[in-house]
Length: 382
Ligand code: SIN
Ligand code: CO
Image (cartoon, rainbow, N blue to C red):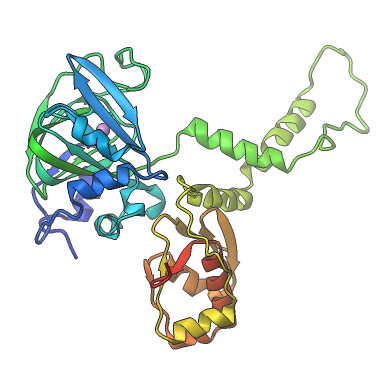
């Protein structure tokens, strides 16, 4: 499916990471993919991240899930919202929303958060560090968009919520079912439900912070270094003033400090693994019984279909003469025999297998490994 009246080239050129955009119902026929009671059901599950945000007499309150089923009946008529993270990992009908945004690389996608609000409900004025497409699923919501914020923007004193101390709306949008609002990172915004049964799907992106990237990258490099990797100055010349730290010493020290950090080959392998590591590991589909490539081939021959685990992250990097496939934090170096196939499964949710692929021992071996680590599932497995 293609979005109507939405030109991704213009969008990427003029809006992405730059300015907000209201996209009036671009879907051929919008139909809300998740009913409110199904969302409430998810919020009661152990391995699902859910929050309730309520406003009572000007005070903001936050509760974390999982919730008891009886919790929702006790809520007031107005001013609360339920937010459920990573719904795309659990509900295929929500996961397919992401297919409209594949013009942005998968590794930049975080998850689909779904909110349900009673009349006037919202999470309060705030800003996020990430791009988001806010799709109105059901009901109506008024979005107010304000100024660009940063780490110096004053926040309300609150232990759990990062709400803006001051918020001035500059533009307002009233979203109806199917409408979509794109917001770049750090724009102040406030979404208020207009009437009951307001469902919003947030297609959330991620972008590593430089400090986080450096910290993880350095940890990775450090893990491979030992105390024996040390400065050495054999055949040093006598020094006139013993107080000087000489340029030659500094050059060598700087080389020691940066050499490994600048290694592109190690970096790409690390980043592939780092960026495909799952956020929620609880949702584990590892099969109770491991499968052998021959058994898998037999099941596929019977017409069974392999699917990607909806919570799994797949990515690849073309490197020298091979393709590095990354799945859920694991790396598989794929030589020519499997390279094209590795690229293919990064673009497909259902793994379409041609006869020659099923015949390839290398491909079957790879698929069995991915199945056994829980990154692929057979459609009719329980
Ligand atoms: C919501 O869906 O109510 C909150 C989304 C957001 O503002 O980030
Ligand atoms: Co937000």
